[in-house]
Image (cartoon, rainbow, N blue to C red; front, side):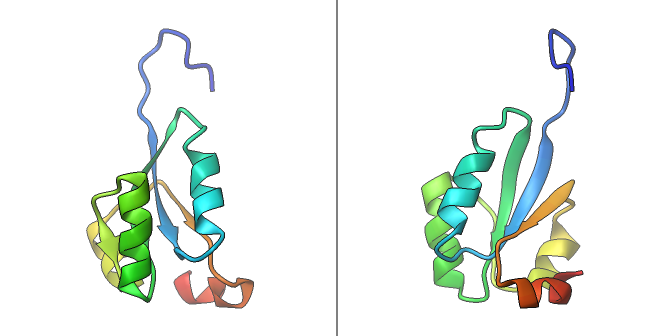
Length: 89
């Protein structure tokens, strides 16, 4: 994407899974100018709240279905165990 002087919208994304690897994965996304984290999900809400606070994200969910009903991310980064990815499709 050539961002030069042309106006463009950031790609909004959500994260599923706020465990150990999420700090590293989200940290990497923050290095990309065109990406904006808008919501985080974890089945244990306190984990999601901790990551949300760390990365200054305002929307936190402990129900993935609710996240998808309320948010319209351009993409999702699933940072859960590989065997759980199909649950979110």
